[in-house]
Image 1 (tube, helix red, strand yellow):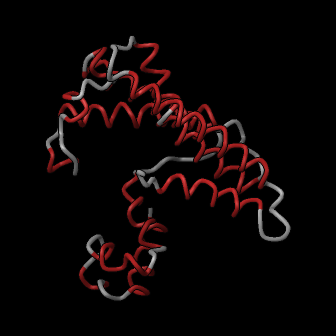
Image 2: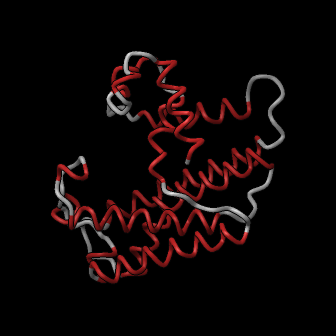
Length: 212
C-alpha cells in the first residue's frame, strides 16, 4: 500500500476543529471550507492525471488549475478570514486568482529556470506532457495573465485597507514556530549567530516578520 500523509492529516484537521469539548463557533464553517476544497483538489488531481493521456484546451486547463492549486490557496485565504473574524468576507475569488497566478508562475519556472534555481528537476512537467497555460498560450501571454491576476488581488486588498508586501518573509514566518524535530534542518535558513539556539532564532524571526 502507498502511504499518503494527507490521508491522515485531513481527518486530524476535522478532529481538531470539531472535537475536544465545545468547538469554536467558526468550526463548522471552517470544516465546510476544508471539506469542499479538499474535494476540489482531488478532482483537480484526477483531471491532471487524465491530461497525461489526452491534450486539454485552455478552458480545461483553467478548470484543472482552479480545482487544484487555486482551491488550495483560496481555502487558505477564506479559512484565515473565518478564523480571525468569523466571516470569509468574500475572499474566495481573491484566493482563487492568487492560486491561478501561483500555478502559472510555477509552470513558467519549469520552462525557464534550471534545477538549481527551483530545487526540483526543471522541465519535468513539460517532458511529461503536463497541461499548463504557458504551453498553450506561450510564455509572454502566460506571464501577462499572472501579472493581471496579481494586480486584481492587490486591488481588492487595497480597497479593503490591506497592503500586500513582498512575500520574502514567508520563510521567517516558518522559523517563528519550528517543531523541535526539525531544528537542525531549519537552522540552515537562519543567520549563523542564532543557529543551534531555538529561542534566539524564534526571536530573530519574529522581529523580521514585524519589520516586514
